[in-house]
Image (cartoon, rainbow, N blue to C red; front, side, top):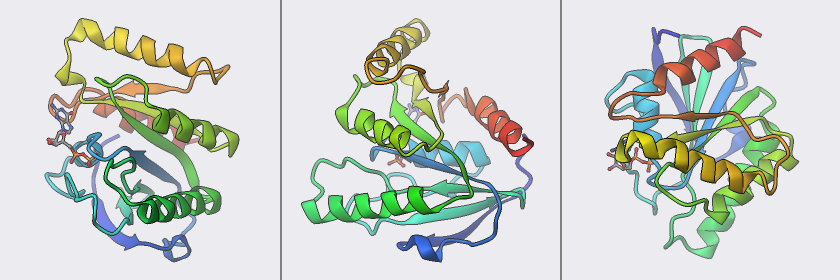
Length: 197
Ligand code: GDP
């Protein structure tokens, strides 16, 4: 898919106020610092449409971007910041559950995982929750340029092996780098394919 236009539409703290047009949307979510903003900017071929390294203390927002005038890319708040207060974690959970429970136009989520890290409970639990809610999702292993090419498969296999303890079918996954742009085309082509179904 070629990105012809990418416009910021709206930021919300309330799912009810998200755009009500019935066009397909794809949500990007992951732990703070996973590389979500960098990946979104790479996907959309923009330098800074999504803000990189947004401060963990900042208001958590659901950001809608309209792409090629026919689908939304949704930038969801980052989670798992070590110093987040209990109150912040609760409000994050409320926001995220209402988003996933209410957005019928959501075609798929992309859960971002830093390829360097061992499987983390917070991510595994979150994906398990998505599965229980029957919300389609794929994984994107980010920052693949940070490890040697021959380590990439090992890291992914370890992760998938861990997931297979909870899942009989392992979700689709991509590997990406915002620096080398690897994986960007594959993710966009996948979205394009889903949009044409
Ligand atoms: P976010 O908090 O998930 O939105 O993460 P950011 O996109 O702000 O990235 C967090 C940090 O990781 C920044 O210092 C980025 O420059 C760096 N980063 C993000 N993506 C990549 C990548 O693909 N490769 C490398 N080497 N660094 C990255």
